[in-house]
Amino acid sequence: MDDNYILSHVDHTLLAPTAAWSEIQKLCNEAIMYKTASVCIPPCYVKLVRETFPDIVICTTIGFPLGYDVLATKALATQAAVESGADEIDMVINITDAKNNNFEAIKTEIQVLKQIVGMRILKVIIETCYLTETEKINLCKAVTEAGADYIKTSTGFGTAGATLEDINLFKAHIGPDVKMKAAGGIRTREDMIAFLEAGCSRLGTSSAVKILKEGKSEGY
Image (cartoon, rainbow, N blue to C red; front, side, top):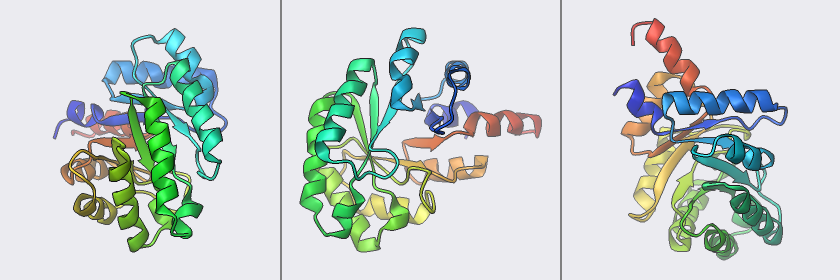
């Protein structure tokens, strides 16, 4: 699996609360140079990135990283992100609803945001590190029935990130139209290859470019 193929599946990510505009610009220039799938950036930078880099694919986050904003807040934030120029939305579910076994509320939340997003891509972050296996399975069903485009493992801000075990669980329980994104803790070239070979269509990582650039110098 060559580097270009790997990078074409990467959402090149910078979501640190201290991210400065100079760092966002560097991220975008790297994404253009290495042809990553998108840049994943804080909502506050979407409009400026769209104006500065008109052709780049912009992904941003909603309800990030904890997910427990009320639906009305998430809906307004999604509308603002779309109007600012976002192409893709990575939303965090209300994990408290999962813990309360209220998967219908989660399904409704996803449906409302998907309606706002329209033909743009909606990825649903379920934050696997906080969930039981049964909750993960129920969320696979909710994401599928709600019409989301992707199920995503993690925010990268939780207690753990993506695992191959969770990706295999997703594969067994999502519908045929739902793709998978692994994020959180992807720190080596081997990690990236493993998740892609397991069936992920996207990888969320802040370090892919650095890893693969360093890899070239090591003979990859």
